[in-house]
Image (tube, rainbow, N blue to C red; front, top):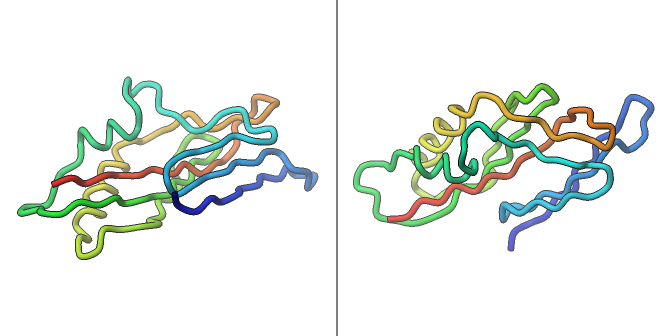
Length: 131
């Protein structure tokens, strides 16, 4: 089912602001004072569906696999970093194509803490390639 990571955010006083559990299987569980996760409501579809609809497959693609990304969404809703956690062996073009689609999502609604203040968070995204 993948690995689960605990992400803890601290405020300026050094106290825990929020906690997010992220799994590489793409499922997220909220805990502590985190009350939201990054979202793109203006897409009118899920982020996963947007990526799937806009994904360009390499020529002569004859395999299947999943690429898993961690996206660092900052307090202002910008995607600061795209980190590849898992790739499809022998298909670097698949990873490059998926990153190009992810970059088309130019802004996000940031996660919020209990005080309704935006916080940075990590969004795990699984991109499936099917032959």
